[in-house]
Structures are given as structure tokens and as C-alpha cells.
Length: 341
Image 1 (tube, rainbow, N blue to C red):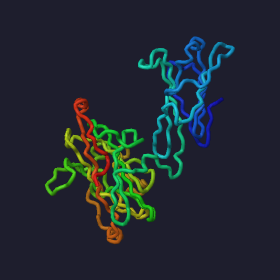
Image 2 (spheres, one colour):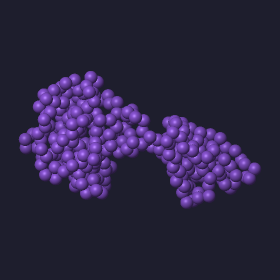
Image 3 (cartoon, rainbow, N blue to C red):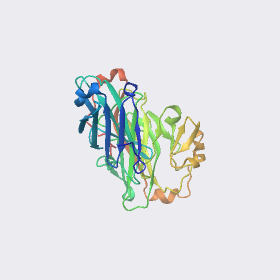
Image 4 (cartoon, helix red, strand yellow):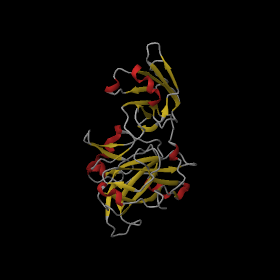
């Protein structure tokens, strides 16, 4: 069985130098994987110590040459495959390992395996069908804001975040009876209180009608969208409120995806290009040039849409950002990591 291309699937097998002479053939199929691993004669007695993730070989044959063939035929939902999302692609990752010693010991060698699929049109990860943290705004729209785990595969299980790590903040608007809408984050600030007061001490994150300020000073960014009605802020944790309860306050706007302007945009600073770029259409990034000054807040359609109640304020927290050296001294709070409405 040779390595194959299946419906645009790209198969990637990176071989560790310690098994450079091994013959490993990988076939990624629509929802499964088949791997044939040629085993050296000296390792045939240890056939049961070869794994794909946490799965043993589904079949093992000894060849006339004395070598062995370990075959792994499994669904991508098995064997602890990790499903990741990267732009317009779905990635399934796992490892072939040889473990002659007990499971608690490191593997003698590791062969990373990766299958890359085009993301199906309109596909949204199951966890994005949020059932918690729902806040209904005017106009019949329902807004959600949640904290995801660092791999962006599920809702976060803890609200304790090491300083410098990333906090993926996902927001969406349900639009059952509306034309397709584009969700924007107009403003976001961090504060140490769940309610903002005139004298509240805040840390600005998104300002100037959609400019991700922290992308210029730090490494934060907007991630590519799954759908126009959802947006993910990949926010690097900060020193503000270190060790205290921190709340993220965001003004969300559901907008016409065909009408972007200085006052209706999602912009982040791309250091490699040394410029501000528009998340939804980099070709129109000139809209973001105002992020270096003051953006025009007037919009021809503003009064009409705002009167229909397409704005909403969400509060996410509490979050606790800690110095990694003190991580063991903090316990996660027993809270739902969703907006507080």
C-alpha cells in the first residue's frame, strides 16, 4: 500500500533519524487511516510494543525475510488522534512509537504522523454550538462569548492562565432569522471588576473601532474565521491584574459583511509585513491604516443598524493570570468560563 492522495488529502510522515531505514507507508482516507510499518527482524519479538497513539497494531505478519509488517487500520476518532484547525485545513495528528519499556518510560523512538484535509465548507467544530453563556440582545440576536483551551479544540477547563500564554476568546452571534451577519469586536478592555465604572482601571485590548492594540505591542491576533458570524481573539495573557480576578469586557457588533469601513472592521498588526491588516479581506487593509491614529467613527448606515440593536456588551471571567513559577499555588475557580450575562 503506497502513500496516496485522497480527495485533496495531503499525507505527511516525518521520520525520526533513529528509524531512517524503516519503511512506513501511510494512507489517509476520508475518515480513517491505514499504516504499514516494516519492522526490523531484531524487533519482531517486540511487535506488541509498537503503537499508533494508544492503539496496538491491528494486524502483524512475519515476512519470509524475517522482517515484520505491523498494520494499523483505524478511524480518525480512535487512538487519541488530535484534531487541529489551521486556517482552511483540518489536521489530524498522532505518533507511531516503539515502547520496549513500561508505558511510563519515554518511547525509544517516535514517528510523527499527520493527515491534512480541506476544511469542509461551512464546517464549524462541534464545541462551537455553544449551550452556555448565552446573552440575548435586541433584535432577536443571541450573542455568546467563551474562553477556549490553548489548542482551540474545546471550551477551556480552567480559568487559571500562565503569564505569556494565549487565551483564545471566541465570540459568536446566532442569526436564525437574519441575513448573514459579520461579528466584530469594536472594543475590548480588561478590568479587575465584572462591572465597569467611570474610575475603573482598565487594560485596553481592542480600541479605535476594531484595532487589536495588543497585536502591535505583543503577539495577539485574530484567527481566521470559521464563519462570518463568529470571531476568535487569540489574546496573549498580560501582567495587568496579575494574580487577581480579571474580566474581559467587549463591545460586540453584528454587521453587514459587505460594508466594511474605518468604523466597522477587525484589524490586527502583522509584524512580518510591518502593517495593519484587515482580517476579512487583506486586499482592503488600507481601511486599517487609521489604527495608527484615530479612526473615523461615522457610518452612513450606522444610525439605521444601531437602532435595530445589533450591538451587545459581553463580559468574560473571572480569569486569573499567574506567574508560571507560582502556578501550583493557584486553583481554578468553580465558574463557567463564559460571558457573565
